[in-house]
Image (cartoon, rainbow, N blue to C red; front, side, top):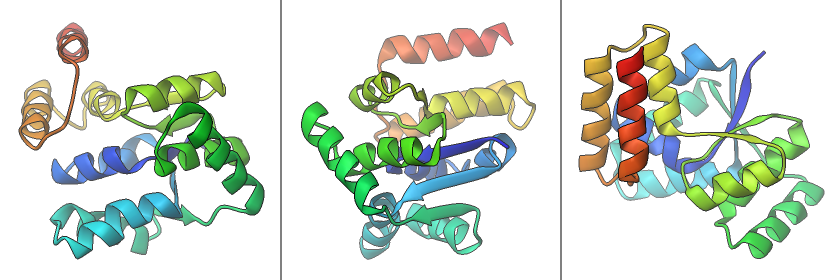
Length: 173
């Protein structure tokens, strides 16, 4: 069974691109800490974001599982946050993955990805999921490029080298 613990930004951007469903084709279980739910659903709904409503439906349907962190996991997250200057959601994702014995975390932020690797986790990002969706035939190359460009127009931050590499990998499929 393939599981992943996700941070807020990949969920938000996948929802904005109408691609949240690709998670279901890649993973059997998507987990998030409560802080991620608060960031991408509660705060998003308060601001009137459509992507927040989409993510909420996935949570309500049990597709995305929300976890309240136990005391030990919360303490570890706070320590990771302070030591590596990470946001709460990022450090809680890493701590929850460690606690649950999961290997993969869905995080786009560069620093958080490096920290995840330090803890033996495999960080995945939004572009990885889109690439796997193309590789598995859930999305065409043309659709993938259009979706990524649309995300960039919606303030998805991506290093030009990473974008070029993504395009090269798509071309090689």
